[in-house]
Length: 452
Image (cartoon, rainbow, N blue to C red; front, top):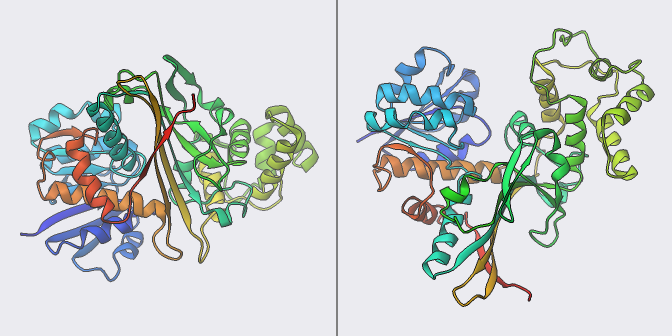
């Protein structure tokens, strides 16, 4: 019996998901994108696939969704609630790799009444991280232990051999816009029993060195709101709960300067027009510099930005020059400052032939056992992309999503229970984790006795 799958979006992480789902000869896949040619490129030469043009904001969405058994929503998270509403009408299951937003959670009753499953957070972060956090937590609790501290950090990075190729110390294995905005979120977490909040404008200042694996110079910063995970992961005893992101040293300082200069502003500016501005002219207007000449632009950078040291200042200025923000080159304007910068960085920071990315994920638990002794348990993934093949980001997100979708189609328990779900219990995590490990994606656990 054929099963019809609709994939909304054809971006950087879609291909491994498509490849996984096509292993089942009963699956027929429709890939929908605003631009037909991008969907066509994704499915070129693949069996049982169709490419269609579709804008998820159009009324046509209801009809297309209703014609399928499950819809995978890989479009920006702001559209997921609308996709779910269409799925409720068509009684179509939904899978996303995104966090469950309040707008999505509000639809839980409608989803249950429609008898459908909306499975979320089945990428890498969120996704793979849940599968192994839940595993260790349940094992510790099963032995009568307590989780006193939980730290989790993930980074979609470049492989170390190309980490110094550019001042951003970064190349984009997923949406440049999304990657930049992920470094402009506010963060809330538990530390020693207290709630700590960091405003978005201060997030990059919170980045601090973190040893994860030998041979890497990572810095880490908290990401979004970690406080609900005390409940989601059932660790009420934990006094510290923090989830965050990894970057190479040097990246947060440059992103911090871009934030302070206003380049991550997504609002429309009447003065920002294509074909009429150089990068230096935009930088002048943005900072109210006296002229578009570099000395005046640098003077404004010094006024608007804060640096932890003179050497960091020099590194940031070198990064701004490398982006071209002081240059007389004509800027390709894309609607607003954020999208204009994203387009520029996508051009400068794309992976070249033979280059590979790296996804690093590590959980660290401080555990107290029944006898009062304490251990540190780490659970770590170091996953490299394939040069000229699937990136590690695409594989870890796309394959995880593909496995979860296939499990849903196959009716594997507990995914038969309607509702808005995420993998927060071993009933969901265990079978998903087993299938993921068969694809070569896993975390390695170590126990490190705590120094007295």
